[in-house]
Length: 332
Image 1 (tube, rainbow, N blue to C red):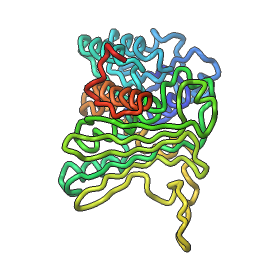
Image 2: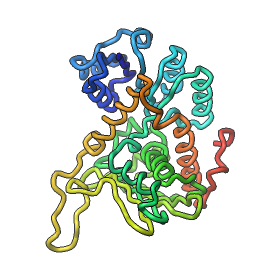
Image 3: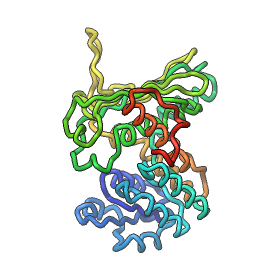
Image 4: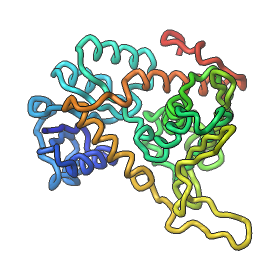
């Protein structure tokens, strides 16, 4: 089986390496107009001269191009009649996201969205505990999303807000883990790390409370800089048990209590923290292409998570809670 990857940046390279390690993948093809990006993967993937060549030679395609290109690239994959895995978000615009989903549906092709936490072993164990009742009545979901260092300022104008860029993974995971739809969100934020975020109408330190159907609450915190390391973990708390994904010797959180073992080799980056998740994500996509497995992260998840992120943006701007059903494609 031949899998194409559009884009050879950091996440594209991660996907290429994981695809190349799968026995069922006989060839990984790549196209990226940036010669420097191509050089990083030339020994692992077959370089195509054009996107059209890649589409003509692939059985399925991973879209890992810059966000602004996602709708066009996803449509091109659909036009070629191929299954597609697109990195989040499909678009920062809800109307464009919904239009792209409708286009793919009309083409009759599969679209998997890159919410990799659905494939993380710890997250999957937490979801099972919720689904089977092992956790008991779900009370709380808590998510920490603390990056090691902020991105370069050139990344910010096209990345979307902290809620649309970073916390969108949390918003998808909250609904997926709980099995419940978010009802409303109350968000706050500050600029404490770098003034470049203020220059780009964003914040670098954020918190939000999400009310889920039935009354359970989800609480998330985020910062673009964490002095200890890359700290991305999520917890579910119920009447019978409490579980965490990301809790371990590499978790970048030091204890202030005397005599407690401190973190050993804290996670330095997302490819390290979520290595197993990214590998499982690509394996699931290859199974989807081969017709051997279901779509474990359908395209609709992109619209659902974006709608909640946009509600958080509106809450941050107004200082008020915002119902998710108030966010429509015509008014954002």
